[in-house]
Amino acid sequence: MKHIYENHLLWVYRAMKTSRYFEEKMEKVYLEGKQPVFNIGAGPVPGEMHLSNGQEPAAASMIVHLTKNDTVTATHRPHHQAIAKGVDLKKMTAEIYGKKTGLGKGKGGHMHLFDPKVKFSCGGIVGGGIPHAVGAALANKKRGTDWVAVSFIGEGAANTGAFHESMNLAALWNLPFILVVENNSWGISVSMKNSTSVSSNDIRAKAYGINGYLVKDNDPLEMYRISKEAVERAREGKGPSIIEIETYRYLGHFQGDPELYRPKEEVPILREKDPIERLKNHLLRENIITDDKIKNLEDKIFNEVDNAYDFAIHSEYPEPEEALEDVFC
Image (cartoon, rainbow, N blue to C red; front, top):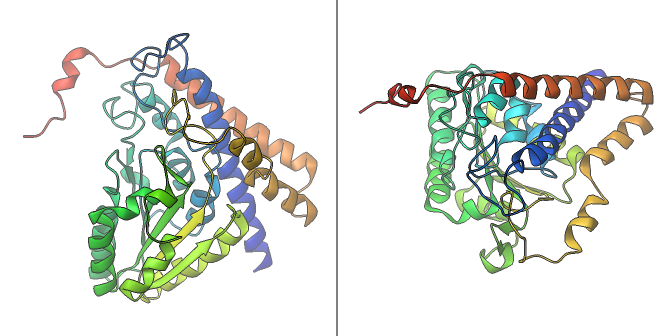
């Protein structure tokens, strides 16, 4: 069991570090052609861009317990979840660039990543992925499998009708469903304390007669432990759960966000307790990995991500007439 646990933590570290490096590159690439005056339609990556730097534990420490048969739905801030679920990194990057080699032939962009091979999807509608995941959980139960479905949302989505209707049905039908609330404190520019009547959304689980969990301080190890329990319960037919993790968004709601709504000292304080560095220090302290092996692992991550960007940059754009393909009436 110790060997499995240590391998899991190494997997979590790799997924988190991959997501961080991928997004640090995207942060720079996205701004090409959009400065000095921000123009959302300019540059090699047009449209909105929502990055998840700081929120990596929510995805990696949950998805490490999942298999290719388990379903994941995500939000408009999906890269960390997509990477952890095993979405094809080259095709994902090409999709973000709008290239024909992308997951959706360049038609979906970064908010609409779909990879049926690993049962991953995301969308731009707040709370829109919750009923989809509940539907997958219902299908899993009817098929007699032990597969689970997980939906990731932000804390603002917990105030939508989709949240309450979906949780009610999931509880009523005792479905293998887990809702992960990534509470980064800000719903666009609105603080959670000004939008939500409860201090944390795990409390709402009691209203549905299901288990609720709260992970404090963006802790990857605690998120790992709680996620393991929730996934095991779901596989054993013990019903759905809500997990809320107190996580951090280092960047704005979207790239180009002036962030006038939050204190200037907030992000530097959050970065001082970065979850990736905390996990790295834990791995070294517990002799799970050495400095040399960490460096080798990170070199592999950097190479993999760099290759994905190179693939996307050198892929072809779709022809204009291809916009009429894959359209259903």
